Each structure stands twice: as C-alpha cells, then as structure tokens.
Image 1 (cartoon, rainbow, N blue to C red):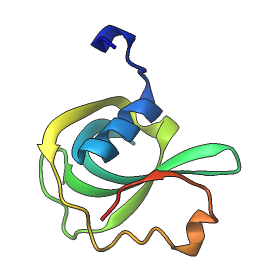
Image 2: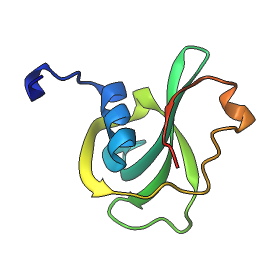
Image 3: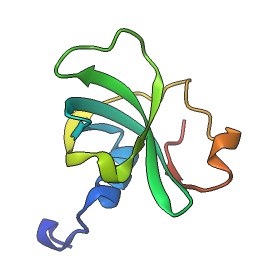
Length: 107
C-alpha cells in the first residue's frame, strides 16, 4: 500500500500515532497543542481522545495530566515523529470509558 492509498483523516491519524507512540499536533480552542494520544473512544456517537499535553503554544504545561479532547475539535491534526512513552496516568479500565474504547496504547 502506498502512502497515497493509506487512510487519512482525524481517526486514522490518531490510530497511527497510538500504534507508533508518536505525538500529534493540532489547534484546539485556538491553542496550538502537541499531544501524546493514549486512547480513542466514543460516547453518544462522538469520538474523543485521551492524551497527555506535551506543549501548549510551544511551551510545556504547568502540570502533566491526561486530558480529554473531542476529536472533531482538533483542527489541523497531524502526526509528528516526536516519540513518547506511555503514561501511568492512563487507565484503560477507567469507568468513564464505559467499555467504548475503540483503540488504546498498550503498556
């Protein structure tokens, strides 16, 4: 399969980033973010990702935390070559997922 035939769009970009353990860039609420995606999941038909925010507008966040982002709200989404290690903050068994995790990082 050539790159031009590979699936494209927000969800495949997140799937690939999770598999390769690489960060993604996006604009979220007018803020440029670098995210380390750990899971993509659904609730009421909407897709969300849970990710560690690596940077906000080019600067590290005040604290490391796992955030939830509505996939449709991530504009200009692109995978990077910036690698990340899985965070202990991610718990795939968290009840908030309600068994609707589509894809998640393996530790």
